[in-house]
Amino acid sequence: MEDKEFNLHDVVEMKKQHPCGTNAWKIIRMGADIRIKCEGCGHSVMIPRNEFSKKMKKILVKNES
Image (cartoon, rainbow, N blue to C red):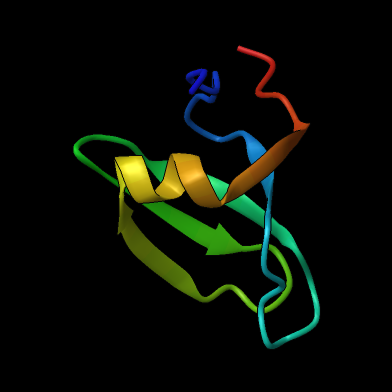
């Protein structure tokens, strides 16, 4: 399985949609666990890095810096 390249403050698309109706999440913390924040309602979730890699579909907006 290939490792997906993602960085802090990237906006990513997950495989499953959030109940609020949006599918865009912003990475707000990285470490052993990754915290992502829903771009629609602002809800944040922390999930393990390996689980995040499996559930992430693609990067929508790459961080500029």
